Image 1 (cartoon, helix red, strand yellow):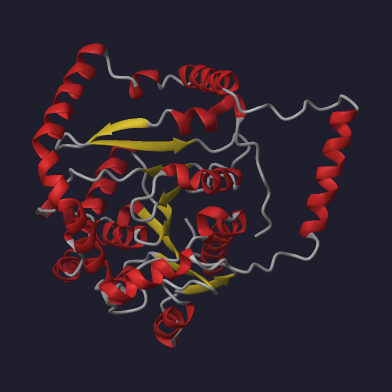
Image 2 (image 1 turned 45 degrees about the vertical axis):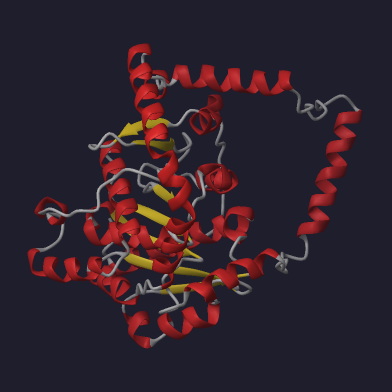
Length: 380
């Protein structure tokens, strides 16, 4: 797909949504911050929304450049910060109404193999998306985010058109907690080697030279210094843009409601401080151990059977979830026949939020699914 960048900041919309996310309250009272970036005005109405599922403990701040690149791809883009507490892990019959009756028992069995923490996140996602009214979306998930996105797609296939893993967990088979932790630490001390197009460094130098010349001629303002005053001005501009879009009330509860929220939060902190102090480290270890035991192979097989496109983006230098092991499991004829596509890119496990070419590769993979459907006559 030829990537055509669109203006993402018409009237400051991107920055306004980034700084002032919408506050969505779940049925159990949990507050979730959902960022919903509108598509550029030049975007085609047929383009599906893209949801970005962050990695474990990561927030939207880590993915700001990736989100901007997705919007430049002329898509409406959504993401959320997963709350550390709250959400439900129990299932009712209503949770499976979107699944054909003949498949419901199998889906229940597959979900039983998913760690409860991932089920909780999947249900937070589903309820948050229901509040936005979005369905038939394309989801791009980084690392652990791919586990709860797959769980959500099993529960609510109507919400999804495609799911794409960007260095996703659960794709290399059964693992060990010690091995997973060791590989995460290993990447901290190794810098990935990239192979960008040969003309890219020269092009960037030309652009930088022309920019300096334009500043010298007075045709372009010099870079704004990063001071308290300039930051305040940027925030004020974003706040005004948000108000023009009518989202002020969504992100700023009235005074009485805010007092109530603050009171509940304060009491919760006091009541749970001792417990978190003792259980914090243990919880992290429990989650890592559970994550190391996740195997998404049967779930991906079922998602394909439910008509959801599956793409697996791997990085050639990822020490955490190695490309070789992913290809050994999903590069088989069985998964090729199911329509699973594996694409490789330079970089390691941290490349997706750090390099724009990774976000563009995800959009290209989604475009391949669209083109495949058009050729087969099944496109929406």
